[in-house]
Length: 73
Image (cartoon, rainbow, N blue to C red; front, side):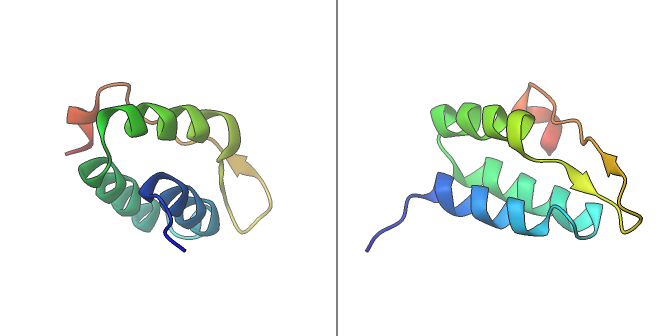
């Protein structure tokens, strides 16, 4: 069964959202390099509504994703 890249990256980012912020940013950059522009927009939409990076202390810290993909380089 073939999976599309968008759902793959959503799953990966969701799983590592509790990990190191550096790793999260690295995976987000990788996703933006490989996704089509429409998929990038959808990933940003998903991220803003569903994904929050969590610290080990249980508090949640939102992570800002720039609106312009060029800022992720």
